[in-house]
Amino acid sequence: MTTIKEKITAMTKEALLANKAASMDGVKGTQKEKELKEAIKPKLTTLRSIEAAIHNKEIEKKAKLTEDEIVGVLKSAQKVRLAEKEALVNAGRDTEKLDVQLAIIESLLPAQMSYDEVVAKVKEIIANAEVKDRKLIGIAQKELKGKADGKLITQIVNEELNKWT
Image (cartoon, rainbow, N blue to C red; front, side):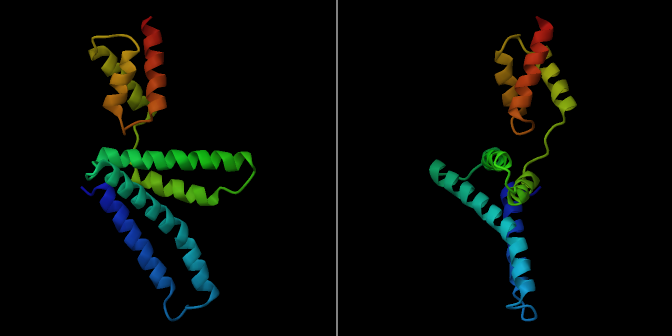
């Protein structure tokens, strides 16, 4: 099983090779070279920024990051870009570059559970839990961390708790 960090490194190397291939002798200095490099630039920039964020977090922690911590860094990067995208949409501006960046980040994140899977898991957690109050949100968040969106988990737990009361 490849780690997320290995996947990022492989994608970066691939983008660098594609960038280098764009500078081959046959197209060097041409419009086609510029177009090829412009197409690769957002991917390369995004991957490098993610690598830098991971590296900075490792320096801050003074240790290598676990897979869960790397997922956290990716989710933070995703949140930032989603907020930027929302601001650009509200301003009526183009979001194409952010869409590319978000697609790259989402391809690195582990697959998220579907709504129905989250509901089933939350029902299981509630059935097995000794408490039947808002503490279940924390329990469910901890158990489903990285597998489902936190807001969705909270929403489903609240809905299920309302059924019990």
